[in-house]
Amino acid sequence: MLSEDENRILTQVGRETPMGRVMRRFWLPICTTAQVGEPDGRPLRTSLLGESFVVFRDTAGQLGVFDEHCMHRGASLALGRNEYGGLRCLYHGWKFAVDGSVLEMPNSRNTALCARLRAPVHPVREAGGLVWTYLGPREQQPPFPHYGFMDGPAEHRAVVRLNTSANYLQLFEGGVDSSHIGVLHSAQAVPAWMQEGAPVANDAFQPQGEADVNLGALAVSDNAPDIEIEDTDFGFHSTALRRGAVGADGSPTFTVRVTAVILPVLRITPAANSFQFFTFEVPMSDTQTATYVVGHGPAALDRNEIIRVLGLDDQRFWNDEDCTFRASWADGLGQDRALMATNWTGYAGIEQEDAVLSLSMGPILDRRKEHMIAADYGVIHLRARLLESVRRNENGEPPIGVDREDHTTIRSVNDTTIGSDRAWRSLVAEVPATSRVTA
Image (cartoon, rainbow, N blue to C red; front, side, top):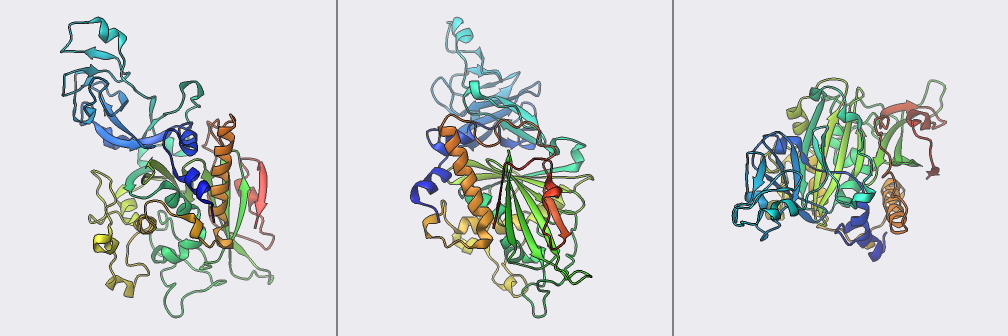
């Protein structure tokens, strides 16, 4: 349970809020490359941390991230003409280059103004199928982060964005919470979980189908894992230990799944055959989140298959044009109650289920009313690390992970059998722990 003040600190991301100041210290995704893939294409209107922006690609393929409203009289630049090396406001024709310089001012004969004025723009980088920007103080701009999914052939990567009308923390907490996988995602994790005679803890379970890209597949059907935590310089490892079959010598075994949590908005979910799914829960505002799922691995990925596994191939909920997740209470959040005869949730797909459950909590969850248990330890620790990051930043210290540039050696660990010694830390030994906490 959090206090009202703690909940407010964690969930509000505006420019003058503690968490908003932390978020602005990091490079964050603002859109996907595909959303602004065409030179001289339609400008993209989007939000980040409670502010409105326009992203566009000019004639030469260079990207610009602008405050949405024209510096002249405030008209939206999302309506502008993107052509001949710049973005032109429709209202009075002022034309801007991607660096903010004013190229033309048709309604002014004072040519010196073009040289003197500059539109508010923000640093921008393009990498890994995403467009990134930095909104914080220029003198504190950190190194641009390098993630593993930025390397290798483009066909080994699949990028999907969806915008959900819920606070980022609800979605982030769901990704760190391992105990919900075998229940909420039972159709993917343990399809027979709700049926008579279904496998129980200590019975091996082999998930069927989509083995490489099924983010929910569990090796054993233990829905009450022990959670262990190891702090790192980037955030922490959240480890779920599930009871497996008894070993040949009669000793217990465990399957271990390690999720790397990279502050302030990223988790890495492991899948089979060394595939990793990087999920960024980026606040568009206090009550809207842009979720970026980036699948990456040693072989080509079928993006359409990823979309299907996520449950985003249903046009009632999502489309690839505006990326908006559309479930609403007008139709019971789109739940198919008849489907529940053979499907636990009445939904299809991991991200569909996660987004719906986060929406069902309301725009911002009142965490004072919760009753946390041991299985929630990863969620509790996520909140503690975020609050610690806020404390550091407010005290003039770097927030957790802001100065780390190389993230390529950070990996999560898919279900791996270990012995009764429960020794899993060697599996993620790339970063020495700054502290160790267990429960």
